[in-house]
Length: 119
Length: 246
Image (cartoon, rainbow over all chains, first blue to last red; front, side, top):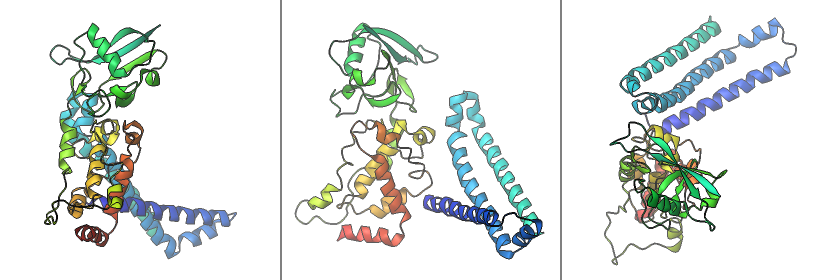
């Protein structure tokens, strides 16, 4: 993928998540004390459901780009070779396993969130 | 008064691992450069290896890590780096060590070659040379002075981790030197060659390059300019190219 696209995706997703977080925070601060009814009516509105869906999808994209960057910095044959020459031959496997784990974890979190929001 | 000098030693022909060798050195009455200190140590131990040539900060040969910070030994006064009467000298970090303080610069030069560090202009020359206005020439100040000592690139963690993919601050400074040159007409192609996720975008702006540059240059600013040009739309890039051609 193009470097500029990743650059924009990281920043746009961060801005959306920031806006979403501020929106939730403003609801909590301006509705004291929050009772069960107020909370349910807030979370049942379509705006909340759609914005939460987008916020978690953007978080997934943001986390993927960040963790992919970390993986291609630190889990390479060169970098792992600094720790031990034995790790050089396992670098691709370690990076692949690391990528699968964080992608699976990200999808699990997002799927669970969407299930809670929309069910 | 004596000072303790610790020098990184490694001879691949006989050493299994590198080690630090200590030397006791009589503190000179007048301030001397680190290179002069090395020259005097080499008289005691001729096996100490390091590069040097012009001894006045022009050739960029004697880049090394001096008490934890990269710099040129020939223009670094001993008094400015010595701490508690101790001085550690190591090779530039991140590059393979050939011997002692001498590093293999192949990866560094490969990145420099990648950015095509020469003027590209296919248009015919009218009057024997390509002219520039004083304002256009001013844009090259702070860019062309780089001596390729590699102090900046080898102080950059992104270059340590991906020296084969991340171009590095020294070569990026030179890339921008030709992008900013009004006589060069290959701006779009130059930017295109840097548009992948590694070449420029692995710079996260930690500015180690700026703090170590012995010539006082600012590669981070040049990288920022390249990023801005890459992020602006294609239309702007075309305008830049046609401006230069015109």
